Image 1 (cartoon, helix red, strand yellow):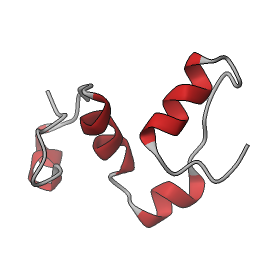
Image 2: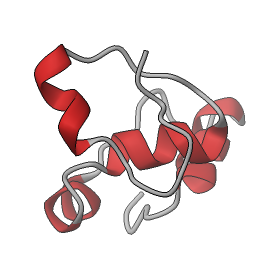
Image 3: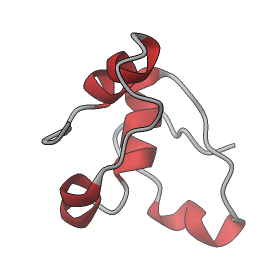
Image 4: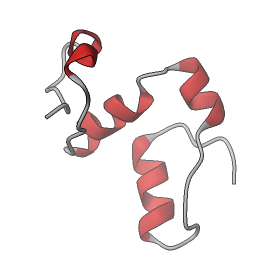
Length: 65
């Protein structure tokens, strides 16, 4: 599979057992904070070191615990 760009698309692939894992090469190169944005979009949280708190997504609820 390729061209996975949306959090819901990646989530659907895993939950529907179409794949065991999802790799995001271009998405992460384009947006290094893709996992954080995806977590916020899906209502999940991410554990991250305190140093990363300054670069958490703005304008959305923070997915960082």
